[in-house]
Each structure stands twice: as structure tokens, then as C-alpha cells.
Length: 168
Image (spheres, rainbow, N blue to C red):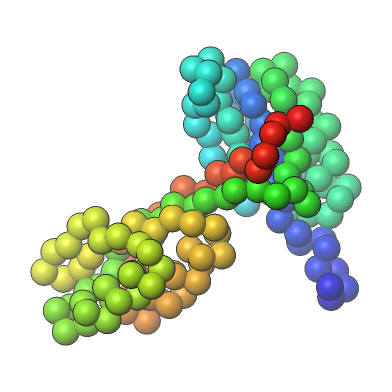
């Protein structure tokens, strides 16, 4: 590890929160007021309709991570905070990528989509929209490989993650 690299380590934190209005704004405000940058934030319902899971990716050293965990734990609507750092997790990021796709290049583009196990979800005479999901690194790699074709638009969901095995 190069000097200073540990300062920019991405950390994945999962927070189970009450599914009610204002909770997301409260958590985002907490991060903002402390000067913590959120690299990625996703929120969705869980198996319990009254509970949502926030998956938060922050970059920083161990001190920043500790502060994030402590501050989240103080929020009344936060039911449980799990730090996935160093744990075996299943993670996914979803991307929709609209590419320039002239007829002469479509075969090449479709071959790349197949290699990355993506799916064409829309096509027109000039472009196509590709859906791709997987670990963040896979999505990053796909985006870089298709960039020369011309990305018209790109949207990503941000990371969602669950720990492997039994919850403790």
C-alpha cells in the first residue's frame, strides 16, 4: 500500500432505518454538517415494510469511519449500523449507459455487452441503452471499455450490499 492510500479507502456502511419521511434528509445533513463526503448512497425498503436499508460508501481513514459510525448510531431513526469494512459482502451497482451506436459498430458493441453480461434494453437508429449490474469495478471497467464509442448519458444506482452468511 502506498503512503497515504489508506486515507482514501472506500468504506461500505449499512444502516437499517425507520421507513419514514425526513430520515434520508437527516442522515445526509449529518454527513454534510461534519464535512464527510458521501461517495455513494442508496436507500430501499427491506423485507420489513417499516424499515429501509441505507448503503453508504464513504472515503476516509479509520478515524473518519469511526466518526461516521458513531454519528449514525446517535440518530433516533437509525435502528442498526453495520460496517462492512473487511467483511465478505455481496455488492452490486446498476448502470444504464446510452451509447452512440451506428449500424457499423453495433456488432462490436454487442460483443462487449455480452462479455460483461449486460443487456440491451433500448435501441434506436443512432444509439442504444445498456443495462449492466455487478460489482463496482465491473461497471467501472465496462464504462471505460465503451467510452470510445461515445457515451451520451450514464446513470448509476450506487452500491447496494449485504454481508455474506448469517447476520450477527
